[in-house]
Every structure is written in C-alpha cells, then in structure tokens.
Image (cartoon, rainbow, N blue to C red):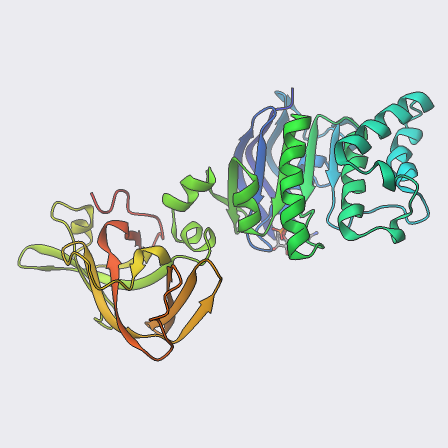
Length: 370
Ligand code: ADP
C-alpha cells in the first residue's frame, strides 16, 4: 500500500520564492501519475518534498495516512530515478545495482536474487559485467531504473528520466516504462516538462504552472476540457490557436468579433456568452478544427480569407500556417497538394469546437457553446 496525499502543501524557499503554492493532490495506491509543466513550475520541488530532500513550509504530506513531514528520507521507502542516471563510473552494472543493498547489509544471496530479477525485468542481463562508460544512454538509464527496482520500494519517482536520450530512444523507453509499471504494479510519480511524454505515459496527469496545480485529468480530458487558457495552450501539439476579441449583441444575437474584426462568429442563442456582451474574451480553437475545405455548412463555421505563410510536412499530416492578430494560426490536415505557400484560401472555424475563456481569470467559461 502506498497512497500519497498532499494537503495544502506549499514550499517557500529562504529567498521567499514560492515554488509550490498550496497544492492538494491524492495519488492512489498503484497509480501512475505524471506531473507536467514548464521549467520552474515547481515539479522538482514537489518531488523533493515527497522524498524528504526538501522541508515542507506549509501543509501536510501523508503516505498511507501517516503524516511524513518530519520523516527522514531513508525511512520513506521511496526510490528515485534521476535524469543524469547517477551511476558509479568505476563499478559494473551488477555492482551498481548491488551497491545500495550491500550498504544496507542485505545478504549476498538475496542481493544476487534481487539483482538478477531486476536485470530480467529490464532485459539487461548481458550488461551486468559492463561499466557505465561502455554503455549507451538507454542502457545506463535501464541500469539506473534497475537500481531503484532492487530496493523494492513502496513508491517510485522518476525525475525527467528520459531528458538525456535522443528522440527515438525516448519513445522506446517510454514504452518500456509503461510496460515496467504493469509488471511492478507500484505507485509511480513521474515528472516531465514534455507534454507529449506526459500524455502518452500517464492515466492521470497533473498539470502545474507557477507552483499551482492547474488541472488534474486523463490525457483525453485535458485535451477536450481544458480548465483554463494555460492548460489549453500547454496540452496538445500544435498548441491551441488563441484569438482575442469581444462579444457584441447585434439584433439581439450574441456574436464574437475578433480584435481587428476579421473574424465574426454568430453564437447560438441562449448562450452563456450573452453574459459577456461588450466584454473582452479569448477564443481558442484546436488546429484540426480550423479547416481549409470549401464544402462547409455556413451555419456551423465562421470563415476568413488568409494567405498560406508556411507548410510543415509531417508525412501523415501537414500543419498549414497563417497569421491572425500578428500571431501564427495553424490548421492541421491530411497531406493536400493544393495547399501551397502564398496561396490565398478560405479558412473555416468550426463554431461547435470553439472554447471561450474569461479574459481576466483565464478560466474556461463553462459549456460556452450550450
Ligand atoms: P521545475 O522542476 O518545474 O523546473 P523547480 O521546482 O525546480 O521547478 O523550481 C520552482 C521554482 O523554485 C523556480 O522558480 C526555481 O527558481 C525556484 N527554486 C528552486 N530551488 C530553489 C532554491 N533552492 N532556492 C530558491 N528558489 C528555488
């Protein structure tokens, strides 16, 4: 059993930096949770408080209903895998795996059993006689994970474990970590700044920014129901298109008009946005909901004409770049040879797929289109 609970936890460093600001988070036993957010958002500080390497300034941290604020790291039974592997260079992989257990005076036979078991799980049996300098980045990372496994901890923490690997290896290791979770069935907290990594790994993702939890959800939930502008812009590739504007009333019908007045959207009647008439507002739309088709239902789409600035070819799809409000606007579609740089085309925005955010609070205006 290893349930983790942060209750109103904050970390204020000596220089008064509020690194973590009143977070509440429960990580259930055997859950795989990913903490994700841009650099400086407080992920590592959260992890360090969990391990016990950093004091908690305010609030309480519980592991299995026991407050651990004052419990030293060695008594928490948590293993951490770091980005830089932290292997001993003069030791073989076997010795690296065995070292922590030796220190703890675990019997030789038991050490052998645990090391061989971890080596089998990670498929590194043939590396055991090698020293780190003779291993690739991916192999070193496996040994580093093995070192955590042999400790048989209650909780595994991964702190940006794939950051030093090249793109292809990262994808491969991601799959391996997902597989490892199914074999180990322990509580895992995984930290990354990479939203793609977070989305592909976690069932439960905690999005952080500026020391605060912005949203907790499944990958699908974060993508389709972002709570606020930050999550809308952070989750998803390419990021959501953001267009500023205001709501006006014309002949008793609410409309969204973009700043610059290029885009006008007739909103459905009886809409929550009616409360925003004459107020500034922010509209967001995913790149797949900005279409370049000519056969569209004009009641369901708002259109503007734009010039193609650039096309990014990804093989199975293309990103077509335009400009609106001096910012890039992206439409994502299947490869289409009629799309060419410099061409002017009609762009259609699916009204049903628009998100509207309060300009001041940046929160999603709930059920904006209902
Ligand atoms: P992340 O892991 O998301 O990049 P961190 O938890 O490392 O973020 O940092 C959160 C904030 O706390 C940042 O503003 C960082 O500069 C600050 N910070 C981190 N460690 C210290 C420290 N020892 N003293 C003062 N400020 C710190």
